[in-house]
Length: 219
Image 1 (spheres, rainbow, N blue to C red):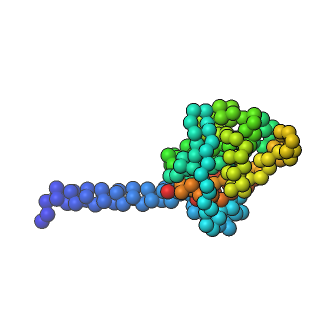
Image 2 (image 1 turned 90 degrees about the horizontal axis):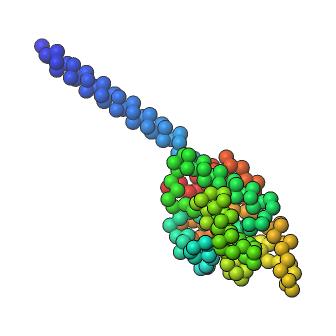
Image 3 (image 1 turned 120 degrees about the horizontal axis):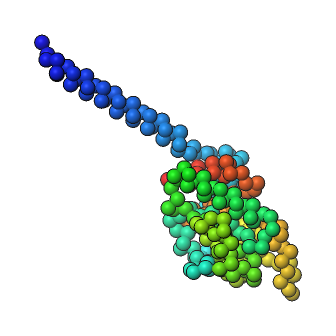
């Protein structure tokens, strides 16, 4: 006859194994609930993101922030959301920047991996937006934003490659600023290879923006 202590040890081992099994199953279940679902291209499009079948390479560039330069090399290894706006923008820019700041907040609350993510505001009004002005403006929405500026030819070169219009004044004999009021309000997505990967199109809703962003940038 098996001693009682041996039987109790066997029961305890079985209970421990059952408990471990339950913990593993629950962990997998929670992980599935919290991991963003990968959307197909049609679902992404419906939710506001046009993703290129093949990302487009862009040429090198150089812009300046408050205390550093920002070049194509700064795109490598990071998912980048790039928005073209200006500090004196009355409506669209602050609205879009606010939505982006809400996106960052949502991602932080979910403990989403952000070490390889960045958010860049490029000024389309370089005559009035110095690097310091645009960077301070961007950081007013979230400290993780990077605001950059440079001369109009450099701006035009990058904007053209990223399908951003309305960055040139209509009057070639003087620097008017009316063209800025109706600038394209898209958010540009660049992948960790530094390539133009897609476009987020307005209107921007935080739930859809968060869903699509996590779908394409999750590790």
